[in-house]
Image: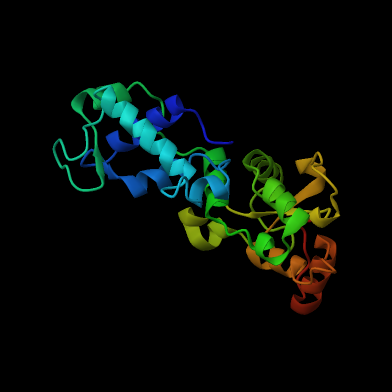
Length: 239
């Protein structure tokens, strides 16, 4: 199980509620916001019903909330200022307690942004291929430290066409790019050590899709570059 322990969830939940303008948060929002801090959570843990009720993840967050209420750091259901159905409200003591944690109002780091990007992506490969390949894709494509290392090494400009998300979309596109495996994951028999410098590169979404468009015959980045040069007349200097 990849769900973090109760102490971690309690701290993160307390910091989350303390950061809200009205010092309260809807339960459903708390589940989602805290899950974004933990890209290691599996889809099953986040979404599958647990004992005919909420998911395993939501169940653990609820227990953390109960423990905080028992410690006097959160109000009990329906109690406190701004209380309302489904809202969790922090007490003054809880606000003071939250100040000690470094998570309070901190800037999102590069590695955290990579993790958040991964959390927002749809696992198209799982839907398309399934089975062993899907599991490997899920492991390699959504491993934050691997993607983070690749982006730090190769940058955020597409190695095939030169597209930059930040140049086109400004702050919203900052530090975003897709990571591509030079050796197709479908050829892996089991979990394999991947060297971000030699085994990975970076491509924009369009080029990444073109590389993988024919599943039985994926293109290498060099092959894609030749196609681009042939049809645009532009010479690639980034590969």
